[in-house]
Image (cartoon, rainbow, N blue to C red; front, side):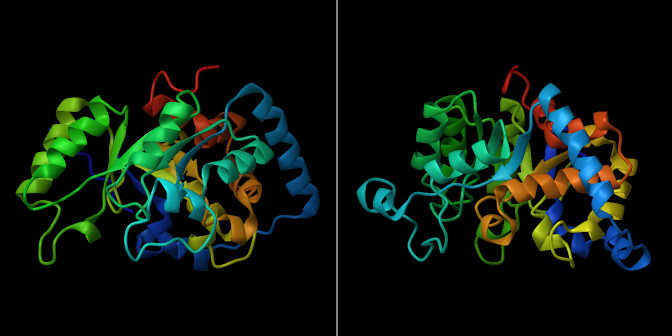
Length: 290
């Protein structure tokens, strides 16, 4: 799980998705070490987590939303061929967040709407203190993605951008001229750039995708312990991967699994607070104020 800092353009603002950890060297921890969590220990850890939640905010660093079928028909159409297979509309998300006592989130523009950001933009305007938006870089060969990026940040209030290498034209890489231009512009605008591979801030997200065990995914304990040991808890942030996590363990279950994993990794209550919200609050200063 190599970390690459691109300081010439953006200092300390590159983050990636920990759900790709299976391809990284740290994946060997799955086979070398086994951690067993007894019911009393899990109950004790959960009690400590509940006490900590009174003192600190829980912020989700990675989730998506998309239109309901009715919203798609009326105002926010899906990109052709990208109709979602499960619910992911705003009301459902808000219900899940309330049940799980999650205070805020970073919304990543979903592939279901591709480069049409109108739905997410409407949500950001409706809930400016609850959500931060991460837009999707458009690698169109004519370079229009640079102007779109500027508008999304300067006019619509997005505070991060995601580069998805699978959206680049066939045979081209993110380092082509368009990619460099968008990356440079993001740097001058001072916004974090998220890649699906490179990591400086590490998302401990979508645990159900990474784990080889069922809920609460306790085989990830040594992975998290090693990541925190290597980079510090203030570089790690929990993400749910809503709504994909809902049919796996529920949104509330996703938060509980991450919190319990952190406790079983022998992290301090302060380190758990960083992972469950403070890291993201540090990255987006001024959001989710007490």
